[in-house]
Length: 417
Image 1 (cartoon, one colour):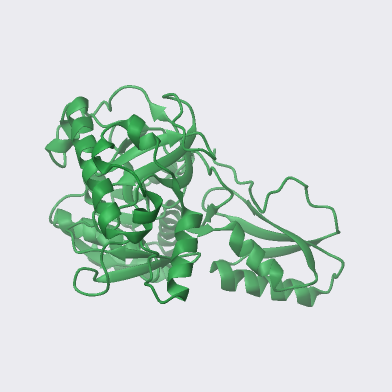
Image 2: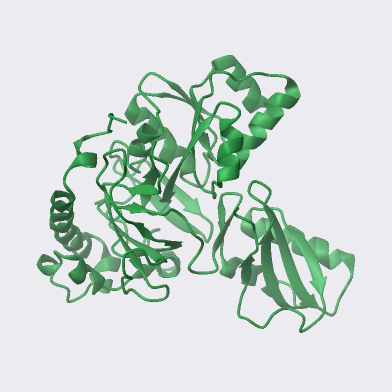
């Protein structure tokens, strides 16, 4: 591999670290001055002194739950949608706003490749002048826009396929002959299976950028056997790109626009290199300057540089959740949502959401302790679960006191092998 997205990818590590630490001090000062939430969270902090990882580690961690709560309080008070975390308001500087389950609202600014996903697409082999078939959602959540703006930054044309309508997706691919696919790996598998069922060949489709789900070796191999080379990226709606896969297939390389720490879950204390911990990210985005934002995801640092010549730190990729929030079919499901469903039904004594199945075939089952066994209650619970989480799920009635007494509201029982 001799091509790189830009010179930042191959700069000496010490040069990158010096640039990041200088930018960190400026970002902390910017957040204190222009984002009221961080004016409060970082009250008394001398931004000019935050020029090392040790100084960064002394700052408080901000969790998604706090982001959600501050947004909720601010909206109730008529003080804006973002809880004081954004530095821009409605208008030309914020062309779009998105919603993630919770709800949590995310702004999109005007910077070219605002979410910084172009670097990941380039590493996956996407190039100027190609057609890209984008199967991430274009409504509510930012995933579709994240990838479309990145493809545009590379000089690609985008077909906004979105989600669902599998036969139409196959037809559009057959007609337009895209060079690559962007979306969840499970949906790509569904599309290719449908194409085979329809007797439609898709020879132009040779690469894929997948995200929002685990991408196990078995599925990577399955795609490769059908001529599609899949690469994964890791990002969030709050932060944009965090890390991306390269041709070396050895972990994920950290993006140039973030400062990443791996901390002991439940704390803000960095762990020794190689130890599994929670990813905490500071973004250098001036429009949404999240400082020490906890992702809730587990990972670990890999030793040494990427064999492709990229010099940024590598991580092992997504290794599970540090909290009980989990992804089902590419969507986050929160413990608060399970509680919301249970509270609507006085017959429910206790509830536990179990996510099972294998990659690409997630099964979501709401187990509820209740003394009532009427089928009508199960149907009502299933409808409520779909309304709250936007996902279909099954309901299993169990006897009182039969669920484990372990404090879990969401159990991820899926196989990732």
